[in-house]
Length: 369
Image 1 (cartoon, rainbow, N blue to C red):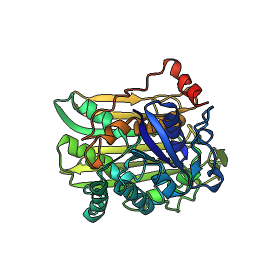
Image 2 (cartoon, rainbow, N blue to C red; image 1 turned 60 degrees about the vertical axis):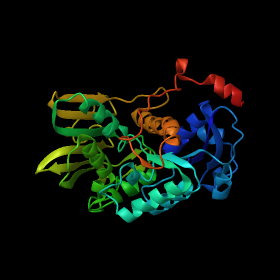
Image 3 (cartoon, helix red, strand yellow; image 1 turned 45 degrees about the vertical axis):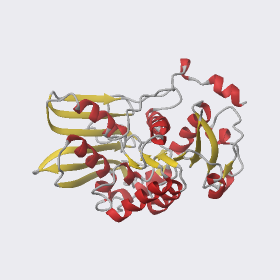
């Protein structure tokens, strides 16, 4: 029997997650919630860009979504600039007996030692009330700095450091809020965006550091953060908008989980808007961008993950990966014990059910026509 799933949010990740929910026969779409008034009343397949008709029209009414009685909700609403609202949304779903998988709120990837206990307790209480579970994930923070390093670490006899890197050109990423307001691209160098406010990096990627530490069985003494930025040498345009000369056009930041003064776990991002900026910074393993996991130990590893797609570039491929990780986790989350679930306690999500010769689900699309 198909798992009944409601979907919330049709932005960059949400639209691609919705595509899979419509075309994957393991799931039955019950409702789609949108925040944009022009999307209300449109068919879910149209919003997802699927050449089919789903019979589910978008709504901005929560009661309508709840009344569709889903087993699970895919929560892909914006969380970066509305964290309190995202927490309330998820608590409401959990208390109603609806399991949740999604991309936000990011803190719930691994909130312990990062969030005050009283806020964690509110989520856990809602989950117990509804006998439901929640799993928040993505790429980075997400499987590139939990699932993959754990798989490698499981082959080591000793480990001195785990370093997870994203090295990417974001020029084709079209999320204006994330690019300009959250990350501060196209802003003056003396402007401090949301991401670089003191402590935000340590919280945002502290979920990955704390989860890695828990899996490795080590105690983190402190989490440190640092960043540097590079101005645009001249004005140019990117997918999200315009970047003036002298404003931020490249950024490098690092978050370190310290043990006895040693950076035991490191998360590093190198983000450019043009590939010619700061050639001295680390370079991706493929044009455009890649992820890298480096383990220093016995044995040591350097593993590059190079996402690609037949439907877009490296940025599109990474978003597809985030959506796929979310949707493919649904069966495990639905059967999991109530509460906040993480990569450490969920079974391995193997991609069971996604095999499609030629990379399409034409039979499902035909069924929906």
